[in-house]
Image (cartoon, rainbow, N blue to C red; front, side, top):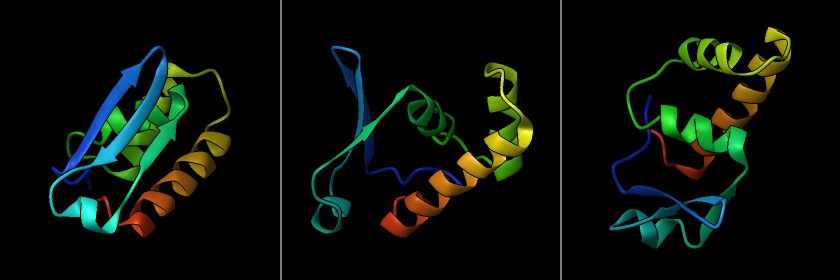
Length: 87
């Protein structure tokens, strides 16, 4: 899975966000505000990823138990999938 090409990521004054452009902007209006952790997942999703590859990258970056990271990743991926921004 990865982000659809119409999703643009940005950061202004330390505030991370994602916006839909093109045809996707007709379905998804507004800005998705991300904290640093969610932004890292969005950055990873710029290229093809699996849930396991994201969890592995998060475990390498953050000092947290793998089961907590996996639960958080699963929750974020479900939200992104429900928004229709994942391929």
